[in-house]
Length: 417
Ligand code: FES
Image (cartoon, rainbow, N blue to C red; front, top):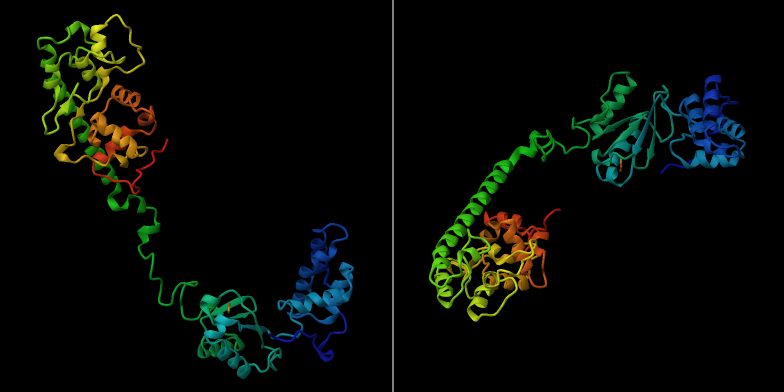
């Protein structure tokens, strides 16, 4: 760091005054601040005084600024001597500020300073032809391209003793010079060019369509649709196979069935046997797991049981309340002895999963194929969790899961509302 002293008397001009234009400009700066706060304009005024004086601040210029702002001279000297942007010594036509801070130091700033000493002379002296002077300063914010110098208003980066010496020679000779990196790199990218983000398509806006995500989404939707159709077909097949049972001797009269298109609920032990699926896991209706069926077997009067509807047709059932006719197809057990992990449906934990298993729900495609009424039936039977299936969109989740898609979390993919 250089010593910040006023230039010797020998080089100090005898007087200084702002030019008319600069005085107008200075008044404009002062007017930006409230009355009594004119001192806030001290830095811009010192800067303009330096510009007018040829790149440095004579003592008379500092005093002029103090007078204009009503400041004690010492206060203005304190500012002028603190900031290295103010030169207290005369400077050359090309004023070289060499960064000597750590990154530049590590990359060879000492060699650059050596070139300055050799070609220009001691720090803060001007060459005999008035062309060059230099000063060591702190970081100029171009560390990536160290070592570097600032010459007047331009930066020169990636310097070597050789290219810097040539640069000084060209400036002195009035030849054109290249600003910025002296080794041709663009801004502060790595030497030799960037090594990342080279694919222009990454930032030309087309990345959205890359990776075939549209195809993936389309195929996922198709698979979900197919799984839902298959589940619906399986349900219809189960309903069809259960149909004749309702017509078997002892079955409830057709007129007593709340939904004629669906099989009548079991009304006798023989019906329970018929409706029980094979061990392979065919869909069941009115199985032992079906409380309505059990009720009809035991004769107990379950409130929502269709058996009750058949036996007590005069008892009105609320139109809003799902009846057992809306009960979705259930399984006696998981297919191939292994059910899906229903806990991957957001909102289903171990307790709910056990409850679903108890109902005969083991697979995603079962849930995916529910109708609105069936969903309502399940919701009404989730003791302690009523409404959970609708609220958490189980059908939509199950459709995705049935395609083989899996959420990142074992808790499932929280549905967005
Ligand atoms: S250290 Fe030299 S520019 Fe930052």
